[in-house]
Image (cartoon, rainbow, N blue to C red; front, side):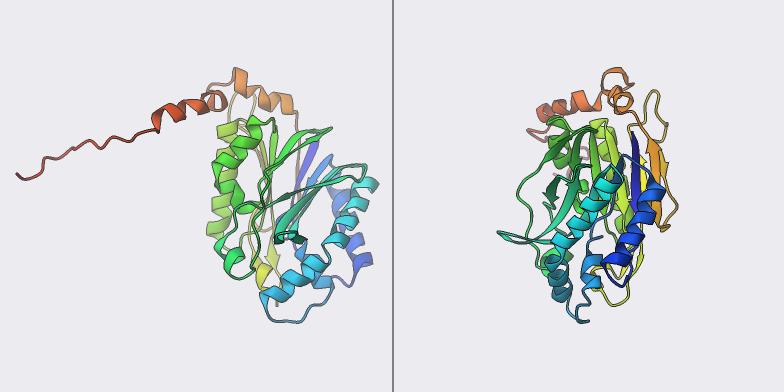
Length: 293
């Protein structure tokens, strides 16, 4: 199985025909069974609509208005190139408000989604988004897949619940504007791969978009991580691109080799996770230095 993590640069293309040509070049270059795009890649759809310059809410509304068109565009790509696609994420209307939604699409054009569960302060205060409610895994012909949208990857119990439910890989579409943010997500991805002894795919947004506060600047490097163990790279990095370089980073992978670390590895992080429960019920304070009488 070939997986491509895409470092994606949003551009002001003239319309859907030009955008289709851009994606065709990307998918031909990726030539993968699974293509993963980043968080807020779907803001590109709002930019094509030409919203008025100004408030963040204008951009949220414009992207939400075109979410269906964005998904349809990627359905065509999935069917044309016979691959699974994580079509990034973007604002999408739900019964509870506007969520940050990521869409997973099969080669037959079937669509499922995962909403971001834990919102950043910016998403709460400026974008007025609504958090998702359901944590899901997706049963595909490639294996069972979980999605942690950016900040979600920094909360280990989410990926843990997904892997306990059978997820063999976690996809992390991300958008981070400063180096500190990309470091948090990147290191969280590596930690999730170690804790759950699974595959983690990190696809970041890169580059600048003048006039759109949501994605005015983005930094990151696409990467694919696994547990550092027997038969796998000692640093856990299966593939990675250069910082802020747009394009796909790919690796040919056998999920059985990665999951084998749970049974045959030097350590048993996945199996031994439950042992934490016995040790965190109480915390004892032990006095080291004597106090004055």
